[in-house]
Structures are given as structure tokens and as C-alpha cells.
Length: 92
Image 1: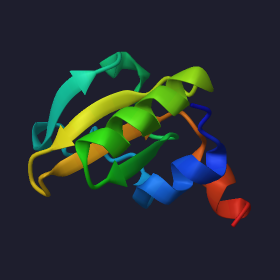
Image 2: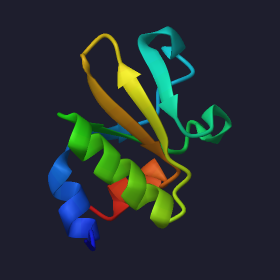
Image 3: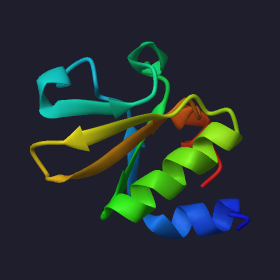
Image 4: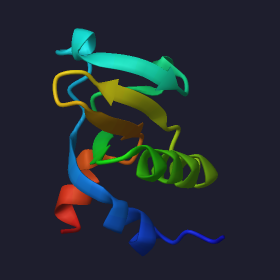
């Protein structure tokens, strides 16, 4: 199966800048290197397990240094990617 950027974006319900440093206790680390998380990157929220795995795998394939997190306050999945939030917002 080949997942495209458009396919991946359909699975993501919310994107925002990373706020991990401010709310670390909110997240449970599942997969990926926590050292990859930084303030310039993005959080990508998805609704279900399968979407979380697809988005994580797609970001890994694209070398976006993903980190899979469980958001305990919202009970959903969050995938960090090192895509630059500022550049993303300029391109919208």
C-alpha cells in the first residue's frame, strides 16, 4: 500500500505547533525518540489506532523523525513530526 501526503492529511484531524515542553505530563510516550521533539515541529492529532500507525509510518518514511504519543487529557493519538510549523503556516 502506498500512502500519499494527501492520504495522510485526510487522517489528521488537527495540526498545531508542538507544546510538549509546556505539557509533558499530558503525554504518554509510545514510539519514536523523545529527543526528536522540539518547539519548531508539529503535533498531528488523529482519532484512532490505525490512523496513528499510518501517520507515524508515513512520517518515518519521509524522515520527519516522528514520535507517537498518547494524549491522556484528550484520549487520542498525537504524532510529533519535525516539519516546521512556521513554514507550514506560511504555505497555507
